[in-house]
Length: 306
Ligand SMILES: O=C(O)c1cc(=O)[nH]c(=O)n1[C@@H]1O[C@H](COP(=O)(O)O)[C@@H](O)[C@H]1O
Image (cartoon, rainbow, N blue to C red; front, side):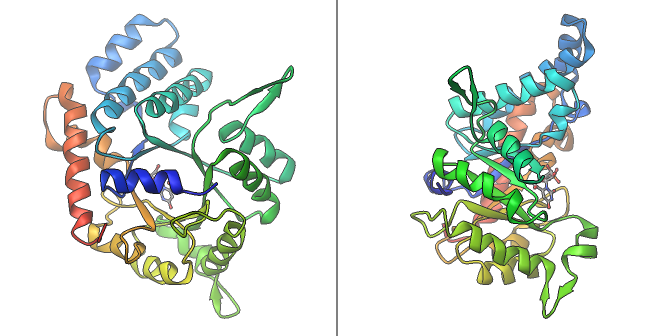
């Protein structure tokens, strides 16, 4: 009921990073796109299956180096029901290969509806007396700005099924300060949300000192990352914004504790589009992703005592 599983895998591979699987169709190598679109009459189905093939190649190349993947749900919803099938099969395939899965859904709603999101992504649904897990990710990104009603249903499921959540605290995007930096008394909105994460997490303690309620803090705000690390000692951070959004290894260093734990750094385009950046043969896309994942790991480990 915490991030113990994720942290164990990070320690085992000595790699505090996660590969974001945000498979925009133009990132999928042309030879895969063409073959799947030719095979299936329904373009949405063909596209979704091409994405799945691309993801499997990436997972095969990354699974012994990178502890986790973070599929971003938007890129699967894009292909309708077939995209949902691709998301589920991506999650299952990553699990088969020993990877931890953070479903990036940024879900939020009022209590009863949030229960449905929680059951869909982390829990089970009872159908005719049988408990079935629809997506079965290990963790889910969520928006906590609806307050406790939107978080409590997740805590129950995290407790029962050993899952975790990452709550948006200080996001990486340029306009995140429009609301998140506003002051409530002496504190910024993101600090208040950070304290709420610490409180929610008290119900889900973990053996490394980090609870099952994590926080999203962007690599593009290194000062806030450092500040929040000190103020949120029991909250594990998911740190997006490395690479394509301009964040570097020095920027993310403040997210870690003295044991080299406390954060996992995400790169999506940087890893999955590495072959385009390298300008190598598109058939080497998975090997290029692996090279970039290793480079990223070594880059970050310069600043992290893991
Ligand atoms: O929750 C997230 O993962 C997230 C939060 C945030 O503040 N900023 C952010 O970029 N993300 C996600 O992290 C990924 C970043 O992708 P790249 O910029 O390509 O590495 C995307 O899937 C974003 O949706």
